[in-house]
Length: 309
Ligand code: NAP
Image (cartoon, rainbow, N blue to C red):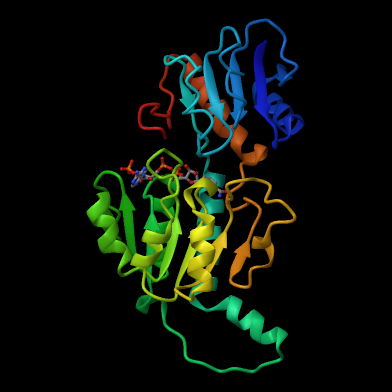
């Protein structure tokens, strides 16, 4: 019988056990920290405590229960030969695409402003731009950023995209590297961050980046919380340079109830729900990889530990 270790504080091990059992037959799933000293075949993990995987015996593959692998890629105690597969099931891509479309359309059609006007009982007619007249910049053109950029393009937005290495996405004007970022930001009215968290992307959303955006620009951070220098963001919102922001991710999660961010009039806050990994759709992805691996095939969406994502 296959053995699993479950090291993911915010995920529901019972759902994973139930869905894995449907596809694989009986399994043994042990929940951190109650993992016995015996061989473990597969680890399901999200932000596991440093060292918690290294001490397990016999592990064949680590599955990240998130698309992001912060906490896994940077845990130097995990043996270099151990494959880490990140989550990338269709549900995650669909969920993120929906969330980005919803957020960009809200910013584009000034939904926050109209909510304020409603509260003030004000009937304030005004012209609006068409999507084809609005420029959206997407930081990160990977699985999620690429899908979001294509979906925005399908709605006729002018879409710019930025990656580490040169990329091509049909209909999207692509930029890379430091010079590419500056060129892209100058034209970006709505900025979507879909970067992985690495030493290079930590606090990338800072005062200097905001200053390069046109006045009134809107930020949507659905990457990772530590990518945003929160004080710089609040200063840019308060000065009026940024028109508004949506944060789905935070340096500290859950966002403490006492945080002043909750009440900032120009901030929209969601509790890291842009794209949820749901066992009913994600187990299919994990099971396909387990079957391929056991048949001697290749694992996909492997993390490059050197690159950090
Ligand atoms: P991915 O496929 O690994 O793509 C990452 C993209 O970011 C690539 O285009 C990569 O460039 C680019 N990139 C990485 N480091 C860079 C740097 N230093 N400068 C410029 N570009 C850089 O990742 P993904 O699957 O699209 O996921 C992206 C992130 O979304 C995850 O890591 C996670 O942080 C976040 N996420 C959030 C939620 C949520 O609910 N809020 C859910 C899932 C994921 P190259 O193309 O050159 O490699």
